[in-house]
Image (cartoon, rainbow, N blue to C red; front, side, top):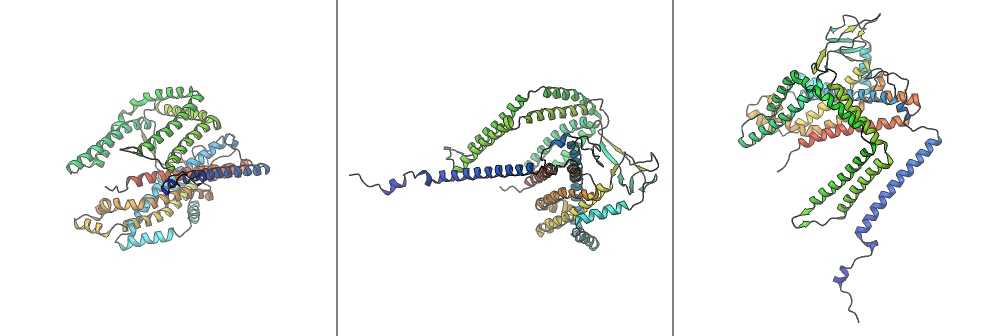
Length: 509
């Protein structure tokens, strides 16, 4: 007769697979993933069937077809394809967003500091500005600016308010223009070397300061190095014109690359990235006694890294083989453009400037091409989004400064620092950590608010896309392009803001 099983032996018995926690967890996760993928496939199939039954086109063929439209302003006012027209709208939107972010940041900081001023007049002006601007809808402000500009006097040959420098009329605003000239790219090569040297000087001066405690001014030293390279490069930059021939040769080499080779290279990159990530992951789990025991989540991450690589290979080789051709053509075009920028006798000054002018080819005067011409649509949207966003940034700046302990201000005042030095050296460096995240949200809002330009006829992406959608009868593909573009813009702004946010984070010992 056998002895009954003891409790210890029963505790070490392996449970049935349907009661094993590891197996059950894996089954649930895989089943949930399969359910999600099946649901997405089912919904996409049903949507496609319904759209085809309703004769709603969803293809993107219009990108290669002449839309028969003209764009009021931009890098190409007479685009020959729908894709080119949308690209013009994207560039106009990006220009508006970048210029608006820069101007709103400067104005917002000034307004925020004005709200904290001990001067009664300055403080009240800042308060009235914020309480007024942020409580008027942005679209109304854009309409107001457009109406003001449209009601101005026509262009004349003696246009003011400062003739030859600032021209203001019902055609918009014309200002002096600074632009990159023929030698900019050669000069930029010199500045790249200067940036490397400046970085080395900054590290060295910082190390000396940490070792000795003496003031070495690393930022000022690095800035001085950059200025020296900029001055020297202004005169010697033509020597880098030979890079144009090299870039042309690179373009020819890329043009002769076989598509299958690019596909294999991309597949190798996906597989190598997965292998390196898994290897790094395992090294992080290594202990002095050897490899640590991996949990179910660890195995799950490594398996999904392998699956991600397999999906990438499948997309490159099977699902989207044309990706390699697109990469070859785009890379070739890029190096051809760069070769042209360095070649063809481009040895002029890196930068140039022009004053605005007024021309009268016929019966009516108009702004000439020399100045920086802001049309009514651009100026109305620019002033609207800048003033509106600056009001919110001003309150964020004020709140960030007030969040700094009062003892910091008292200590800085006790050692005799002036108010300007106190703000620049003590308060703002600490407040920027608090200010930056919410200011990043305002940057995102500004970029998306530029879509209101359609109300005043400015040719941004939304306005151009709506015109193309009406011309081709394909609004859904245009909507998809809008979504992808604004998603890319939002992610780019978030990445930049998070980069500086991480760099400013306090590192605890």
